[in-house]
Image 1 (spheres, rainbow, N blue to C red):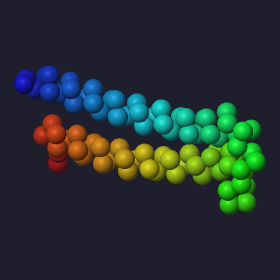
Image 2: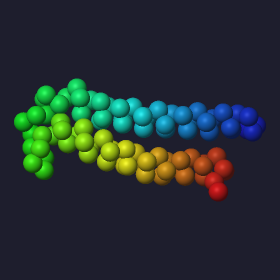
Image 3: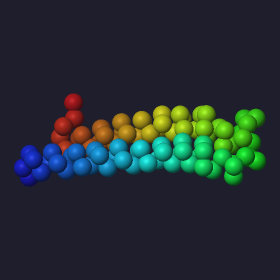
Image 4: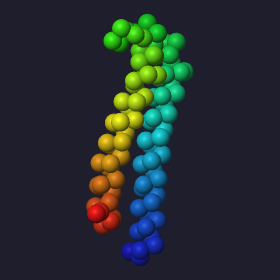
Length: 85
């Protein structure tokens, strides 16, 4: 396989991973914190509503988990394409 095809495949995979992470984060922060907040109002978590929790801590914790997931997946992708450090 030529370098150009391998490089394009690597970046396509990288952009796909980034897109998935951004969609998950957007759904959790915008969906859970704003759109679904009225539906989550009656559910209590730590003394506050679940909708408020998603808006304040849930999106931040999801972002942290996504960072670790991205690092794990990118390390595996780097090894797969032979570009690891």
